Length: 102
Image 1 (cartoon, helix red, strand yellow):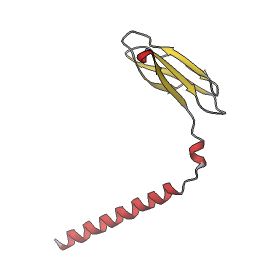
Image 2: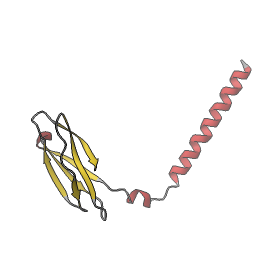
Image 3: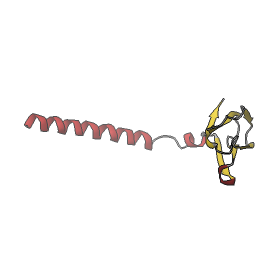
Image 4: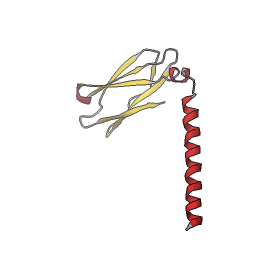
């Protein structure tokens, strides 16, 4: 039992050191990294019958399509910075799933 206890303590110490190292790395990440994140903001309209997507990148053009459950996806659309598109569900029973790169 003593060997098992020593191994358990050693394992717990190793895990604690590993996690503390991850915490230090995450805490020292430059704040500018968060500002570089951009993508497509999605908003449901009319109880999910329509979806409005906006490119919230300041300098990047995106190609995206609307992906629906139980229905065909939209065609690939080019979103310029700040540009929005609205897409209606293709079938009455379709539900919005996500935006996908294309």
